[in-house]
Length: 314
Image (cartoon, rainbow, N blue to C red; front, side, top):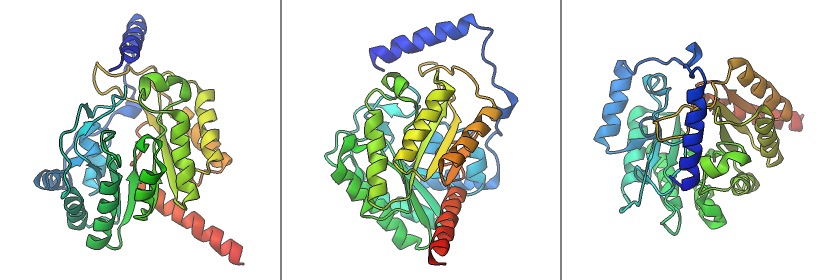
């Protein structure tokens, strides 16, 4: 944690303690992870010595998704070189690179018989390519192991390197996701090693390279409604296709406290505003996470472009 983050968390914790206290509302209650499919996916991930963002980021939808037979694979290990104030993934200095990881991820995708695989990673800022070639190899291995599976990647910013972004783009993923996460005013505490304009630039370049693009926002960190809508407008300026908006949940006491629990009506407002702005898909709700219903989002975008193509032909 940076000194700014520590001060912010302490101040915010004191402010919340002075209130009556934030109680998690009914709309944020989730099921305890159970079910045969959940156990099957957990066993498979463990046997392949892989990591999932579902576990590492303590996703509230793990039960629903794993019981549907879907998971988001986290490559490049489980130690991140950055210290984001919202994230439960470990921060440190990675000491190794697993070159066999792409093959094992692809094998898991085949065994799970996935039609839509999501691949994300920790930040590996110490690597010259930021881990981009491991992303590329993972995409190519999945294509060989499960040819009909769509591949969505959720990438870091690669410190703004266009060449590293191109390493991923050349492997031709079906969807390229890079999360903006929050509003510019909160970047110093939420994403201190990142840059808002740089994240927009990643999405802009990916679109110019022909990618279907996607990004996500968390709310409940202290942002205002107007700030969220302003970020949405910025995203449309770079022609973003898919937007996800979900409630931030504090993973531990060392992370940024929840400022407020956003009501479902506000999430609906963001959805309606987003559709009116021209996003092709907007997934907005309390439990929405970047990879939540990713397969259905992909279906929605595919349908949009097919209809657009048919209209242009006619």
